[in-house]
Amino acid sequence: MNRLENKVAIITGGNSGIGEACALLFAKEGAKVVITARREAQLEEVAAKVREAGGDVLAVRTDISNSEDVKKMIDKTIEAYGKLDIIINNAGVLEEGLLPIDRVKNEDMDYLMDINTKGTMNCMREASRLMLEQGSGSIVNVASVAGVAGNGGAAYVASKAAVVGVPRHTAMRCASKNVRCNVICPGNVITPMTMNLNPAALDPDMMGAMASHGDMRLPSCQAEDVANIALFLASDESRAVTGQTIVSDFGCTL
Image (cartoon, rainbow, N blue to C red; front, side, top):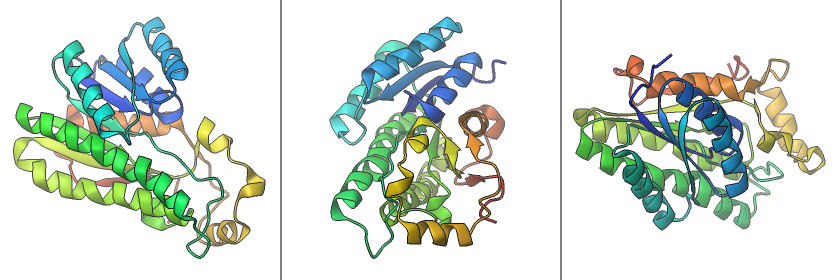
């Protein structure tokens, strides 16, 4: 308990799945939590759960692909709590078919890059500016094992590989100012987003290639597994850890 006492944390994609798990856990550990997402009704449902558990939470509707929305998210956090100690860049999307490179669609590339890559970088830029001024902070990106192992649709892999790569740059840039940046790369996680994938729409060649390069018999992660890693990286327990990538997939891609 109280591993994040007096800390202020933004959690993007806080309306379900990993984001919801992070919000509940961080609030339990003493953080003041700002949750953001595009779906306002779902966001308020999670905020109500945090309050019922005794947590301090602010829900801010945000489209991270819109840089002005991200600036407003930061501004509202400062208005409410006066500082920002942690940002968990969790918001992201999947394309339906997991299409391989020879079948990938331009619209899928644009959609995933706008949210997964540009959106995450929008958040990293605004948070890092504030944290550099403060002289402290922890930035945690939730990417995907697809970004390091290639096991996913081409557009998704590309979007998440960037989310893995930019934190090393950020860690290098910010280390002298006590601002850390790390990445979590979960394997398959049981969340509403992954459960809503239509199996019939998945590319059979890509699914076959993924099955031959990973042990699909191993367990899937739960959202709480990822939240526990995020808690460590957000807390002062990891104060010497920056620029690192942690894969959480039960060894599926070893």
